[in-house]
Image (cartoon, rainbow, N blue to C red; front, side):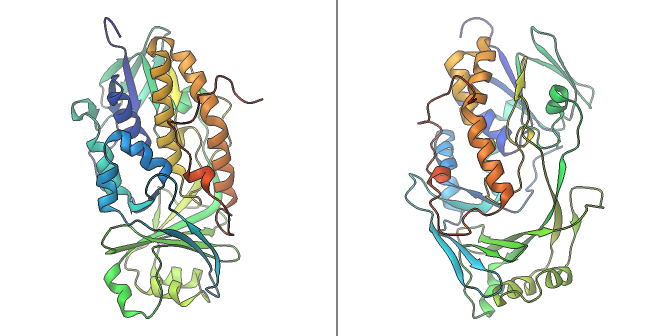
Length: 378
């Protein structure tokens, strides 16, 4: 690139936005990342990062650190939530990289460390965008402003950038909630039960996904999927309780009862999604991750899709250069839409790995080996 370096603004420094910032910077682009939170905090609970994402983290230079802090399950077990019978035992090895489960906050901190600290701004809640054709003017609620040549909306399911592109529209409540709790691994030692590294307990109409989040197995995490007819609460989540969990999973396997018995604090989250969007970009604005294709978390691939988006978008901008951003955005959407939509559909259906199947289409995917597609499939 000659002359003035075009600027790329990433809105949102979550897992997708942090990946976009780090990957684009490593590719030589001038990138500023704007995050609405006032500072970094260790938010969330457990998260899966499969081999498809570890390949990207190798490019970011954080794969080895992640492997060192994470639990590394060899199998995904599916079990009948009532009887304990095994429904499937899916190997998680053999896909060219490690499968990791980790605390989301620890992963996020690692990703943030890969972004140039001088280009990362907290307390920047986006208020308005003006794409005037020659650049984009950004205004933030703290009264500051910035200018960029390209804006990447990585600002989640309630994306302000998506609103500019497609208008304000609330996401769809899925009719499900997820309970989340972290349990001390030490507490589980009093039970003469098997607690696998990564297991999903399936009931007739609900489930509980359980896994370790640390290499030393000191932290065990569960997240549920439970039907809930309407979300009548304000805010992102509400407090739940051991008693509510016991009622929700009454009659389930003793291992589930033990997890509930060991629960000190549990929260309940509504699960939202959106229908596939008619477009992923317009003008100098482009979307990725939950801003673009949110999904229920039942495949443990929502954040992964955002990180894959970031890697492919970086490849496309490297291919075309920032001046030809329209071609880059078209390549990006054509290369990502089919995969993201398939994962969205399978995740929302909630049958992934319930029975013995080959998940290589998910875990064996390599964003750096996939050819870029010039056109959207008909």
